[in-house]
Length: 172
Image (cartoon, rainbow, N blue to C red; front, side, top):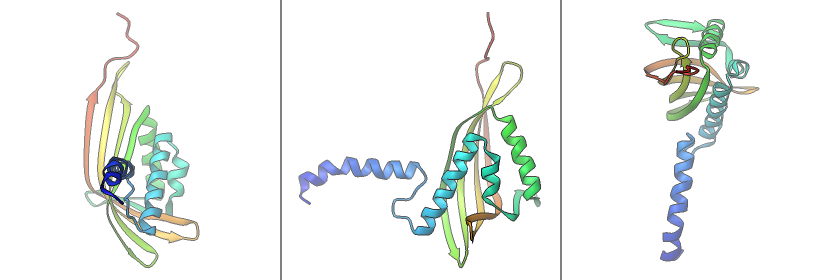
């Protein structure tokens, strides 16, 4: 490739790399990374749609969610907590992920992932607030006859920010 073409192509290549990276997909990913990235994309779509059925379908029957302080929820408890969380949300503005680390051993994969969810939630009569939650999770995925499923999710770090929104529906 001559220098002139390389200089002209550089912005396009940068745009593609930037777009792929902002979608949470590594440009030179392995088949495992690609498969799990697709699962995280599916999870984020389900969060945006508040689709608990799809999310629960991504978990193994013996799923456990380790939420900190030695507390772990089983699949049934996770479903209840997730339903309460999604019921509180009025609108999901954004749901993103970034795979930080991935390793595999046989039919298991261990992933450290950072997920960010920005959602509007009620803050009283005619008031809303934006809740931005960023969590770093250590997850164990297993390959099943029906694809990759999450067996265990452990919260390593959580940060939540609440921002008050202007009142709605108020006539002055």
